[in-house]
Image (tube, rainbow, N blue to C red; front, side, top):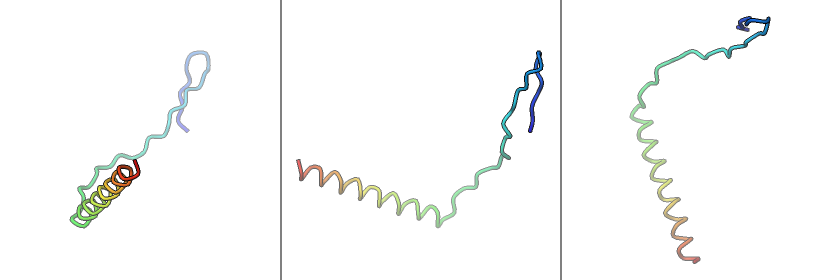
Length: 56
């Protein structure tokens, strides 16, 4: 564990930092899946709004 000793003998702990990495751009199949999920989300929200309108 990494720590430093301050004046007066107090220990100051530091969190272990995770390794950094660069994000990779989405592949064509991932983009297709995002579009499909967005369409399903829009259909769900539209359906809920329709039900709320009909009930009220």
